[in-house]
Image 1: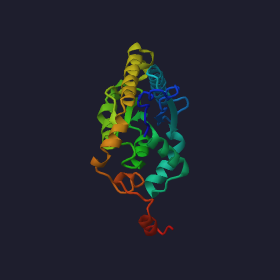
Image 2 (image 1 turned 30 degrees about the horizontal axis):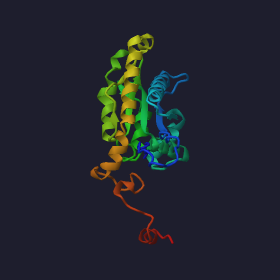
Image 3 (image 1 turned 90 degrees about the vertical axis):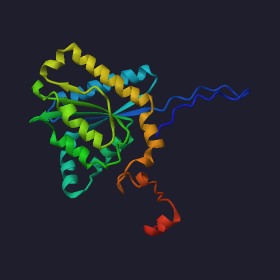
Image 4 (image 1 turned 120 degrees about the horizontal axis):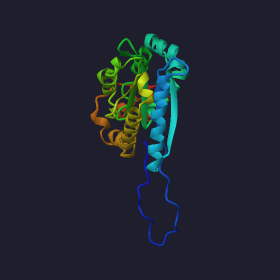
Length: 240
């Protein structure tokens, strides 16, 4: 989707111009935290801030867009039950579709990810996040839930065909004052930006898109390589 400056030198004798600026990248930050303030949101924001710092060091302009699932709870439930997608939920879906990377953070309830968190990703189109780098995080009141990220979240995001960074993040109350926790956040952010800088998502979508199994309608027709802007397709859909 984003094409970096190709580095081709100017032709001999041509006017000297400024090098093209790298295309800005977008990081979607998804939090299922329900309290205010929320440690789940705090974790997501810490990862996003560190990722922005890492991106700047690589000369990448990173725009952060926040998806607050608490505000979308009713919309997500309606979409699950009736398949009706509200404008607010569609806007959140568009943010996810266009994101070059994602930070996804959930609270843990009864040894599992938040129902709101999983429901949001369940209502997204199957092909929406293919190849997108994702950093996963979870928070809980006890360290007994530390395996939720690797045991549950990775499976969900594997089904969505994203690429999750190796370092999973989990925060119990004692972790917030731990230096080692800050090191883990930095490591996860470094891994996430490395995937963005390496163009993993663009390569997958540009070179391997047709090799994936797609569901009709899951990506606006692009999943099957259908061009709807033709005379025949306009005639078939009642257009002119």
